[in-house]
Length: 349
Image (cartoon, rainbow, N blue to C red; front, side, top):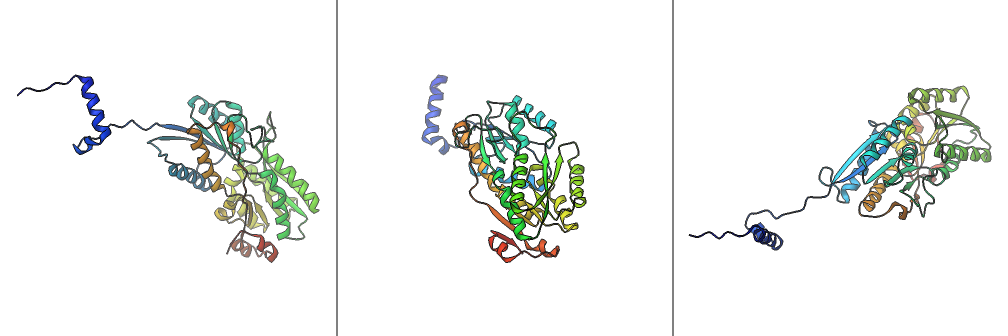
């Protein structure tokens, strides 16, 4: 019997034709497929890596990416970095620039600030920025104009509302301690979101006839110790309530703050729903951070598919949750007035 030997080129052409027509599968031969493209995405957050806050929101981001067709190890490589000190975040930013991922997600103003200074070319999707325009990250919300876009907390517009709700819940409050994370030094460009929110809270307090005690926690190597000192000063200063300006640091130490408030029976207003649910805080007014992390995945998907950050408007939240934990109120012997309860979008009993 004579064997027919085909030239290599004709053999490959015939094989590809069979693959396209599906005949190869019938013959028990797997069709040829191009390997999936591996997308590299960086994630830099101003958070503690082992906190429940970090884990829950990172999982929401992962799940949203999965729903959009991205599977880690198959077509997605995620590079995670977490830090709370400016020097640490700056080192991570430098590392990411060297790695050159297709997109970097930046969670929290300190993380956003170092990446903003480190690269003007790698696309950056921001989460948890209080005011990206005033902070100098984007030219405007509608037209970011550079390599940064994403999701704003609208934090500088909420401080007054939070303080108003706190004083409605506890009428007669005359002195409020405002806990906020202050940078070791003012950034060279823009103004920190924390500073902007503190100023707005001061203005709102004056309009409400309430005295303010600044409980600034300076950036340093031991944030926990600095936080304890700031909280203790609230007692020495005779604060009658606590107002927590949200940041990656204060949220990561939410349990510490809530426990302190419980020991000293201080009514406390937090900045996110998660602060009430995860650490038994008393009240919170703000956006759902879980939703923001899911929406960040949508921005990443758009950029990976070719969209330019300059053309993607920065989203402002349209829904705000006012959460009250009645279990905590009862444990502290506090009563929330019915007119305030009516305003709550969620009451934990």
